[in-house]
Amino acid sequence: MLGFLFAGYLALVGRPLEAVNDRLQPIPPPPNPALGRAQAARSVFGMLTLASLLQTPSYKARLEMLRS
Image 1 (cartoon, rainbow, N blue to C red):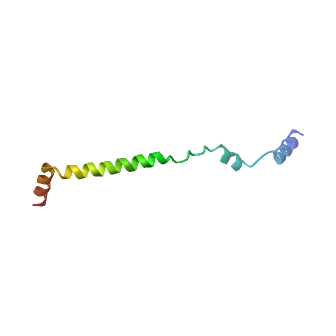
Image 2 (cartoon, rainbow, N blue to C red):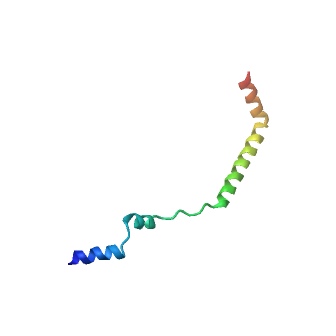
Image 3 (cartoon, rainbow, N blue to C red):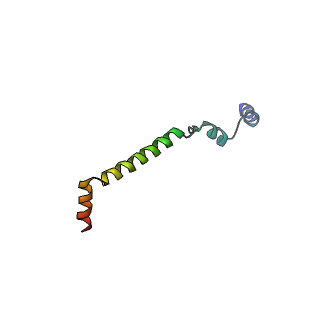
């Protein structure tokens, strides 16, 4: 008798386990556009720093030594 009632309950109210598992999965947060801008600013700053370092006399001398 209890099995029959439980089966009826599952048929009327119960959902497949896949739907329940999908609902329990955490929803990832939306991407933060500020992080992308910060990363772009860091990469531009790094390129400018590298370019300025390559213009110093000591780096120029090292490059000339490596070329020869």
